[in-house]
Image 1 (cartoon, rainbow over the protein chains, first blue to last red):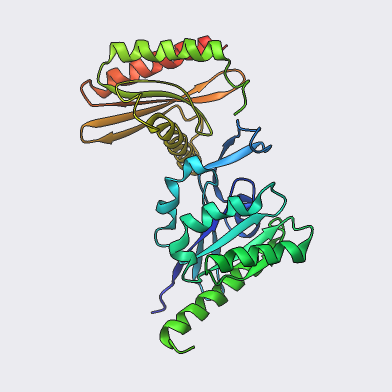
Image 2 (image 1 turned 135 degrees about the vertical axis):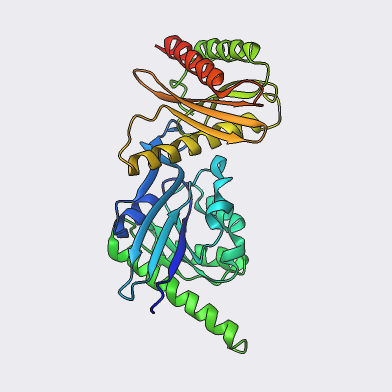
Length: 186
Length: 135
């Protein structure tokens, strides 16, 4: 009998980085969304915001399933973060380079999700990169400071192929991490 | 947050309405009017002064109400009005308050010293009074 595996993956990042958009772009089912009207337009000019979670699903050709969860990005919903992180196999970290202080916002998530990020079972997608080289270097330096070995990509979460690229890269990362456990000398 | 969501005068008026409900049911630990995106707009109850608790409860009320809404939607049920959570020694009622321009959540945590039916009636009346105050 062939056992179908289920893998839980978590989309992490601040409000407006595109977690809901990314899950919507690749999910094979209409995503479960808990978006409500955003009343805090001073902090972020956006019509709606996620207050609990996003959920989507992808079935792989092997029959295995990816369960995609998105966190609510605002700090006041941080009580949801450990609940959603529990059982996650890897993290897709999203960042928006056009924010006034993009690194400060990112540090909140590097700290909160350090238990998975420190294992290397993660990838990072950066949106709205204008000065690509300089900012990518900045993000990579920040990840180095945290000693997180996570690949970074310039992406547009509205494009399905970009989100699939992140998922591909994440599975490669997970394989590399698992191989290194099997062969610690690698 | 958006200062137009609730004016200062309305906020005071709503706080009085919450305090009235608390006076009627002294076993209320927290009664909060929250925005749908989890901001605490007015609070009363025996734990209203606990550090950060009303803010956390408002955010959690928003999450729980949204999750209830999502579950209802999956089962083709719309127009969520009440969510009930039952614990040993605690019951929580979340009631949606819709005005012509905004939607809010009235969240009440009570120590199970009154029966659920009475709490639901009080929540409904309080929500109606809030709605009238905000029109």
